[in-house]
Image 1 (tube, rainbow, N blue to C red):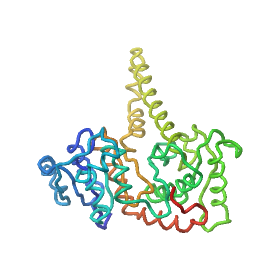
Image 2: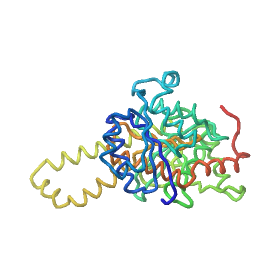
Image 3: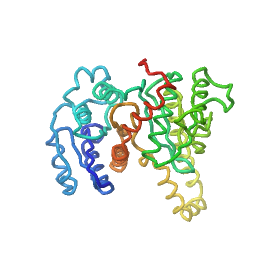
Image 4: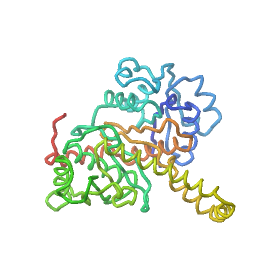
Length: 350
């Protein structure tokens, strides 16, 4: 990156803040040289940590506040009492164009509520969606919504597909990402009414009937997510969150069973040692820290939620996603694409 990009960091958000936030920024600094940082939080805690990283210090500024939004605060309470908090001020810096995006490992509900209140929605977008990456045999796929909306109408699903398309193009560099709509079967007659209607709209948008073609694959099932059948998986927040947790649980089960198997006998241990280089590559490939950073798509600004329990490496990847979104003009791209297809989706707010 050659142009200056500024990322706002909620330095007090997360299980091990501000240490992990500063360490993560130091790692991100090595990979994203054109990024500057605004740290929001308690200066007496942030400054000593920042002084350990001289190169990072040169491109960083601390904005002091004593207020912190705790992990157990309700979103409504955060809106009432958290307006001087590190999270809120970090989000405001995006609104005031002091930063191009914000990263927080803090309270998810509070971050979503404050982002919607301070930044608003991209014009034409009705609902936000939480999106993240998942590993596949083909590389990575983008999945949304992962929990922002328990139920989604047809127009919401269509807009999720459009935002997912723009996100995959700007962050994964895919020229024509393939979009799949999650369903209980691949037949056109299956699924709820809203899913079937969304299918019809997306199918039309993928044809030559419009000037905004999407690469719509059609319906996909749960097993297609990990297989990498499509680059983008679109679903409502209820199904998306359940699918994500099922994938995470399966991954942990696989790791536990592998460990038990290796410890079963001396020959298994010897075999594991011989295959260790391959297992190390596999571990690196599926390392959840590599995919840390859930994006609040639809918000009128780049907002990324880091996992609260991640380490510095994971937090640095959340910063990297934010920097890529800013660098590639993700928000402007979504604005332009929503405006172009406004005749295909509803423009009223719900």
